[in-house]
Amino acid sequence: MIPQYLDAAWKQARYEYLSEDGVYYGEIPVLNGVWATGDTLEQCQRELREVLEEWVQLRCQLFQESLSHTS
Image 1 (tube, helix red, strand yellow):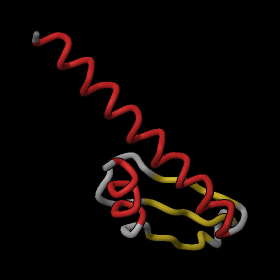
Image 2: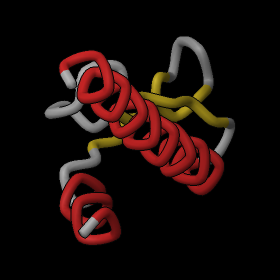
Image 3: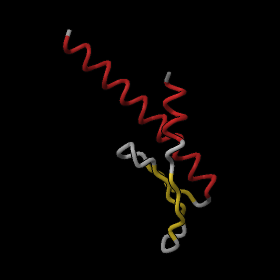
Image 4: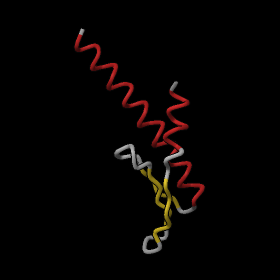
């Protein structure tokens, strides 16, 4: 289930080149706080994928913790 969620979220990724800063910026707009930058588009994509995976892991951990407090 999580791989499908990651793939679905990944399809929402948007990128732009920030010429003032000389970097690529990527984000997944539907997930608050999931963004990354990189000197190249490929680097930005790698960083964004890592941020996405960490975001999902954190959300799962927080959800599990909330369940343990309600039982």
